[in-house]
Structures are given as structure tokens and as C-alpha cells.
Image 1 (cartoon, rainbow, N blue to C red):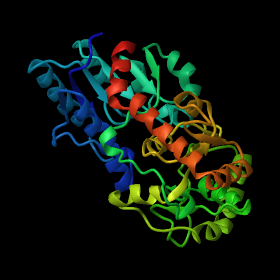
Image 2 (image 1 turned 30 degrees about the horizontal axis):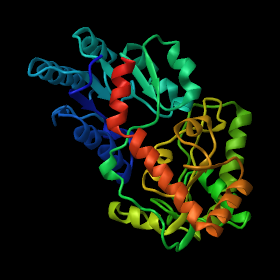
Image 3 (image 1 turned 180 degrees about the vertical axis):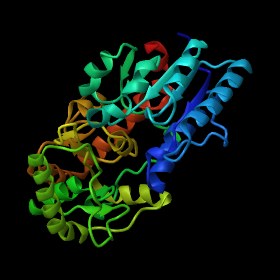
Length: 358
């Protein structure tokens, strides 16, 4: 297929609850596409997507806009980040029948595949970052591309650490599993400075809701919540407030290493590590990035040279101490990770892969 020149972009803001993540996706999806292509058509204001939107009415308005864009200059593709609940599947089928391929990106496929399965059956191409989900997508029929997120290079100012104020920092919300992992690091002598929305609340934020589990699993969840409440004060002692957009890169540049915690519960309620946006974003800033190990990270980066990975709190603490002892090596890892992101994980690179996959 020819290279993309004109696409319709669709990434509902309803996928993020907080301001930072809405802005993050807008920068790296809408603005990233806009910087990489001659022409990007965006949804009009009269077709807002959100939890309270009338999906059928919005889908009809989107179809009118897609059809108009196709008739006025042509469309090479629709590129979306949608759940099945965002648009009618009939909209996707109608667009494809009109000769416009529909590419849908989805993350969290390892524990929330049901949120996209109906839509994924109708697309021209499914794009996702988790290798563990390849068989499930492959069984649906449409072509697939298992590759990491595409980032907007201009939204990644260099934040390499020259003078470390903190040995290791973490940016993110205080979900239950993160409180447990951060407490584990603290017990291994590794004090992580945490920033993000929610750390100054009286209690840690609850973990995301998931489908009901068996009673035994429910009891396990209750025990976990009790443990999280007990350990949260230990972690919160190292916490700060949310970072404004302009404060993120300066904070990262003051950390000798930046911690990644990339777990989510699968359909059985078990925590699994998989590639998240932060696993590409933070190396893109030039940080020495230390994250949980999984096959997705291993295929996106050269572990040991571009990023560092761990399987236990003890191993993570050891990697942080090594980075503090050898700042030159930590900087080299950050620089190598940044080169990989800017060379391979931007829209300029990913658009060619999407076109070839189609």
C-alpha cells in the first residue's frame, strides 16, 4: 500500500480520567500524527465521544465527516484509538466498504480485550503493543501489527540526568499494585521519590474495577486492599503532588534513574507485566529507565544497553544502586534509549509500518 498522506484521526479523550493523560494522548496521538503527515482530518466539535455520548448519533456524524473528507481530497486511512463502546461497529464496516482502511490502536489487550474485540473484527488492521495478545487478535481475521506506541518526537525534550538530586523517581497515580511495589523497594533500602495525582490524599486511590472474580479471588483482593492501606503511608512519605506539564522533564532530569511499573490485572485477576506508554515515553526523554521485565519491553529495546529491567524488588533496588555508583553508564543507557525511541518509535517510523501491514 502507498504511504499515508491524508488520514482521519480519532482518539476519544474518554480513555483518560485525568488532565495530564488527556493531554498526553492528545500530544502523542493527534499532534504526533499532524507533525508526521501532510494532512490530518480531526473529528468536528459536533461529534464528541465520551461516556455519556449517544454512540449511534455520534457515529452517524462521524460517517458524514469521513465521507466528506474522502470526497474532498481523498483519505488514505482512518487511524483510531477506540474501544468498541466508542463507535458503532457498523461505522467501521461502512468506512472500509467505502474504500477507506480503518486502523485501530488498542493497548491493555492482555486484561481488557473484551473492550475492543467487537471493533477489532471489523477493522482493516489491528495495532497493539502486547505480544501476548497476538493469538487473540490473529483469531479474529484482520491483519495485525504488534508494535509499540508511536510518539511525537517534538513532545520529548531531552531530560538526561547530569546532576542527580534523587536516586530514583516515579511518576504515576497511586494504584494498589504500585503502592505494593514501591513499598517493596523501600523495604530493600531503595527510597523512590514519587510524583503524580493522588499521592497527597488521605488514602491510596483504589485499583481499577474489573469483572467479578470467584469468592477466593475476591478475598485475595480484600487482603491486598488491607495491605495497601497499611503500606500507603510508608510510600506517601516520599510523595509529592502532581507535576505540571512543564515540570515533568526537569523532575526527570534530577533523577539518576526513573522507575517503571507496568502491571495490570489479566482476565483471571492476576497481575501481569506488559508494555505501557511510559515504557516508551520515559526512555524517549533520555532517562536511565528501570522497568518491570516482559517480552514486549525486550522486543522494543535492547535490555541492558537501552533500558534496564527487573523481576523483583531486590533486583530493582540493585539496578538503582548500580546506576548511582556509575552515573556515566546510567547516562549512556538513557542516551541509547532516547536514540532508539526517536529512531524507531515515532509516528514517522510507525506510519510506514502501518501502511506495509495493510
